[in-house]
Image (cartoon, rainbow, N blue to C red; front, side, top):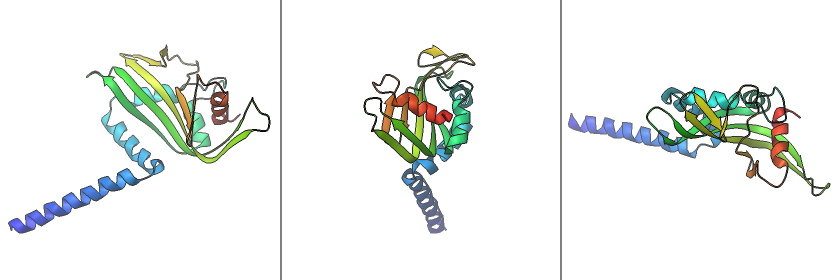
Amino acid sequence: MGNKVARILLGILIACGILVGGYYILPAKFQNPITQFIQKQTNDNYDVLVNACKNGEIPKNKKVTFGEAFDERTESVTWLIEEFSVDEKGNGEYYVYGQGFNFTVALESNDNDDSLKTATNASYKVSFDVIKDGNTIKINNKEVKEGKPIYPTSIEVDQDVYSQTGADDYYQQCLNALAGR
């Protein structure tokens, strides 16, 4: 009897190990939806933080929100959060990012007219630094207000990362491409 119970427990442990190991070797396109589902179910602040980012307007692209643009121009869209120094009430610093796949963008260099960076079927990711303090949400230290643009901390297209403070204008071109311009 004890031998059967031990075999059953060992089988359950092996199955759990295979599932967890399989999750970690999945590419982000398949891993992120699982993580998003878990975060929606377990984090009380998920909707508040993600909706603040999704409903924010893309800079220099009036009336186009990040959520709409991701849904229209990318596939397998996910929104995930990471917590940093968060108290028991959910106030503190967060890192929120939206990611979509199969995005195509062509970036022209202002320095050289012959230069064109093109990414086809690329991963596209926008990252936001978010601070939650009670009912106040700040993105990049600016309070979120409806109808006002929000600036991502960084944009990642495949392996290339562009920041708002970067010397080139690829950052804004990436935002324009996401908005459909």
